[in-house]
Image (tube, rainbow, N blue to C red; front, side):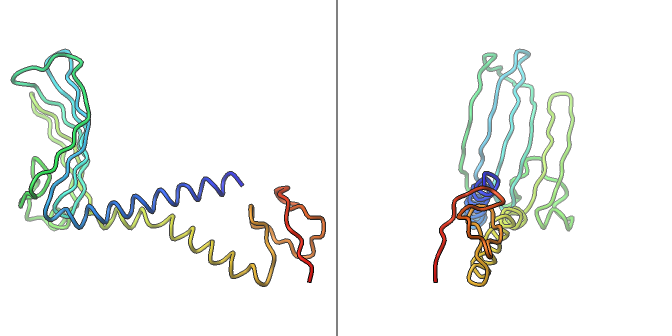
Amino acid sequence: MIRRRLFRIVSVTSLVLCMATIALWVQSYRVDHWFGYATALHNGEWKRLRLASGSGGIEFNFQRKQQRTPLPPGTAGFFFMSLPASPSGIFSPTPDPETFWYRHNFAFVNIHWSWWTYVGFLVPHWLVAVLLAVLPIISLRRHWHMSARGAAHPACSDCGYNLTANTSGVCPECGAPIELTTG
């Protein structure tokens, strides 16, 4: 019963994230959205984790950079920015834009210089939306299957156990009370 509820909660969350990804995908050709967390280190460097959406893709990256004007150590916070869409894409150090993979929003960048480290990957919105839609589709299919089967075979509403010929009023699988119908 707890697993079933947890699966439903995860499925609904996945569906909401899928819808949000589709909304970002539609917007991504007009506006770039950046969300992340940045912190200043004691040696004058800063670290940043960033999730960006734009130009049909979602980018996740980690950066470590030497500051020209150091921030006070311990300065940290979340940030969100919306910018007009960049024609070159959202990847800061753009890989070769002529490759098949980059044109279709698949990329991985790993740059290490003495003053800057940049590691990131880019995936298309459609791939994220499809992956997030898997659980809701499975959940919906299970629900349809259970309701279609329910007319022919009574089943426990908590665990789905077949209750044909059960007269005890309790599910033998999970112990949940069931309503006995006469007719």
